[in-house]
Length: 493
Image 1 (tube, rainbow, N blue to C red):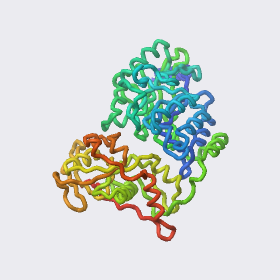
Image 2: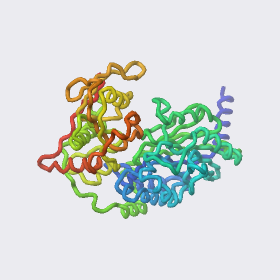
Image 3: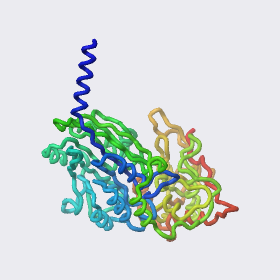
Image 4: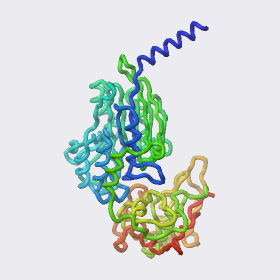
């Protein structure tokens, strides 16, 4: 037994001598959150973590860097690229929000990027050529290890595009792998702006899990995003899946082990590093650049709130929240309709308690969507409501409408009850409804609105949803602050 134990130790010691560790850092869905929030996050904290780590590393991002704060909105994403250049990112893919400023504003960002923009499934429409400054993959050498990085863009841009088109992501991945494998990399990674969460719950990104099932042995690591989730050390077959959350609250640190003699991939493990600045510190150069990029005139106080308005309900049986409900109330009053519907994904962060600034409002709702009004029958309204429900969360919040239901064993909605102004919904009755223009167009979670003809949709006024929030806040003073919208309008029985 002693001989066996000694032999095992000798083998382990021999492997340790031959093994080489290389570090890959990963972020996603940074959305322009350059600065810490409540002592956590920001590019300067990320810079400090990287500076204190190994000198030879890879830094990757899975997209959605272009919009989400006043700095990115006003610069049309260019300030985000400037900071990513300063941090020396190696590569990113293209997220859906890289199109927030429409297709003509994508090329300036791509041209400014000093890091590789990787999107194997992304082409010019008509010519099917690669757009300028976009590559399907790139091979990096770090710590003597050849690491291939293949990119897959999100194929549902926030604003429609006629200039660009997409092919199926797994087809694009196969095509890129054939080229990559001819160059004999030691490690193969994929950065995608879709999430492993869709593999478990269904959605546009269901292909992400298929990478593990179809490309095991050819792909080693998949870095995802889009769903704002955290995944660490998740595996399908021998493929490692990593997702790092959102708003630069964390960075994932992946240790890739290769055989020092053969160069072959051996294993990989991930670690989530929360970016609490009292632990990480802040890189001075990145901090200075970030401060120089701050937008002036956005830290004025607009109004006051009585208590925080979070994006999460306080009661586990409620699927709505006070912030979205309040926004829906503002929208219904502005549009003068029976029901107002707002998508919960449109609000990005919680509303703070007390003094609220213009910066806070832009962080909460950075989009320029106006208000769209239409008339539908009760049957169509019910269809919209049902489309907004999924296990554990709701895609919509409402004003003028209440919902309760139960989930069956498969997580499907059943026994659905809907009231409009405290009266049961009637299938044949006509209701005036309104929502933001993005959802009214049938974009993203608003897919049910595609069934309503465009000629039945009309714009209400000129104000966008963020301006409605600003108007609502101006009604609150330090002595009489704004109160949150009550929860419980969407409830599981």
